[in-house]
Image: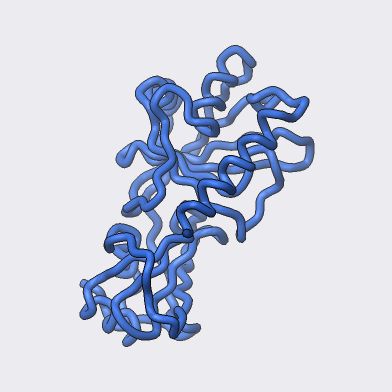
Length: 229
């Protein structure tokens, strides 16, 4: 049911953009940034194919519905379809994925659907060229992780929760407890839209909008706020 709902939301999001009077590419193009510098695609002829691949699934780019995305080095992409509404997405070369939130052309919202896009070869080549002279941001190091508002031991070990589990559509009705990861570096794993929570009973983890079955021992360690190493 969650997958069907997510697919419907994505379809509505894409339709809203493609059926509008605006072009598929942001008017000012894209800016790709690393730690100390940025590169830009300003020409519409270059920006439109990039936008189609990133947002609309062109040339082999596909949405991942249950991604395993361990933290890694990344670049930030910036664009804007509307004046005063800047948007940010993230390109993770090691995983060959692009992540953005909500509608590509609308305002940012931490509660919107999170999209992880597996990139086709064409857009990957473009992004590799753009980032060839840039230094990426390093994978985030959490300064604090809380489970149910209380700090855990060994915060960095909780990043493994982004790459564990098997998707499931059944879980206990007892609910979930939120896991909040705090870092000095804004990233796909630590921004306001990144979501992790652990089931109050059983071995279940919610990551973004998908529930995963995880080993019971791992779930117990999370609920106990112990190290996950």
